[in-house]
Length: 127
Image (cartoon, rainbow, N blue to C red):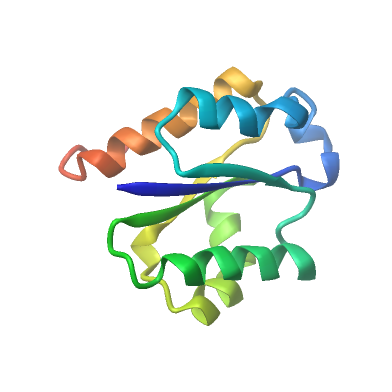
């Protein structure tokens, strides 16, 4: 399994004040089994959507690749990134939304770890 991780800083809005976006991508790559991690200032705007769609397209033909986005609420991400998801052609189950709000880097790492464990063993129910 290969996981490409994108982190949205959501323009540095209040729910992201606890995370250090300057070190988060490094921590994700150092501590977790992911292909890479990158931070974007606002994935839901035009440039961010273009980056997301490029990453999604790069994963569309590989059934072992997932694109994990750490940003706002999971349901909100599905709505905000609907156009990029449809435009990329990636299967919806390969888009993994992680809520990164209101926590520190350690909290985000724990949320990512939990999602990675779920991807590795899809028979386990989601919490």
